Image (cartoon, rainbow, N blue to C red):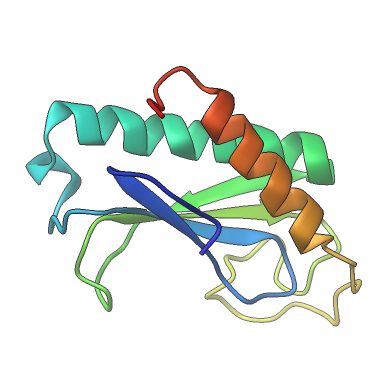
Length: 126
């Protein structure tokens, strides 16, 4: 668990690339089922995550995905992508394209920065 508050939580997905999942704490099947506050914070937290990944990793692209077929509750995958990762330009669920460059993801530093950015956002009430 990277981050948790009363509305959302964020988990790290084990991968060769930086990849997190932002979940609503209350279970909803569809984003349209969420209340306005939950929806706003879900997307704001996802945007903060995207910006943090771009700044921290200098990624070539950020991918968002929300299928929820296997885990039927609202969550958003956010992935920092690099032109030399194993799957680029395919999705991480697609066909491997090459043996990608291995990166030190500095997960602890990244997660600390992401947590700080989320807590510094005025949506969070501590």
